Length: 309
Image (cartoon, rainbow, N blue to C red):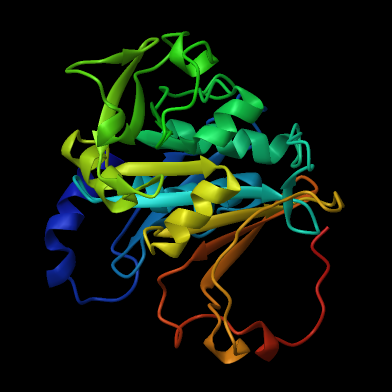
C-alpha cells in the first residue's frame, strides 16, 4: 500500500481511530525534493493516529529533518484545505531594505525550502508589491516537482502585463482584482487569467479568494509574500501555519515583516505552538497560529541552554 493510499484510508477512519501509538511502520526511501547527495539514505515512516505520518525509529540526520518539516503537508486528506504563510526576515524583523531590495535576506537552504513548498502546494499566492519589487518567476526550478498555479493579488490592477509571471507561460497564472476592475468575460492580463472577487477600500476579501481557489480544486495554498499580504492573511486568521525564517542579518530601517494590530497585554499576545528548524545559517519558526493557547509552548518555562549551531 502506498503512502497516498494509506493516507486516504486513514482519513476516512480518523475519527473512529482511538488506539494510541504506531499503527504501521513501513520502510520508505526518503526523497529530498532538491537535487542533492544520497546520504539522506533509507528512513522508516510510522503512522500515528494523533499526528499521522512521522519519521520512524532509527530515522536520523538530514532525512529526519526533511520528513518532520514536510510530511504534515504530504498527509492532508483529499479535499482538505490548508494555507501556509512564509516570511524571510532579518534579526531586526525586516524583509527588505527601504528601497525594496530583498535578494537575498535568507540563505540558500531557505530558498530551497521555498521551492519545496511551491512543489508541495496547489497554488502560490503573492501580493502586487512582491511582483513589482522582485519580478519573481514563482516556479520550482531548483527542485523536482510541478509548478503551482501562480496567484497574484492586485486589487487595483496596477501591475503591467510585462512582468515575468504574466508572460512566461511556465504555469497557469491568475490575476485577482476587485470585481469593478474586470472589464470583460475571459479577460487576460498578458498570459494570466483575470478574475474579480469582492473587496473594498482597495483590499480584497481574502476568505473569498481562498474559497475561489478551493472551488478550482486548489486546496493547499502557499502565501509567499510580501509582508503586507502575509500580514493580511494572518490578521484575517486564514493561516493554518505561519513560517518565519530569521537570518543573521541586520538591515536597519527597512521594510517590516509581520504587522498585526497592537495588543495591550503580553498575556493576551499570541504564543502559538511551534517547531524550530535550522536551515543553514537561518532559523525557521514553523508556527500554528490557530493552536489552542493552553497547548502552546511557553518558552519561559523551558530551562537550560542548548547550542543549535
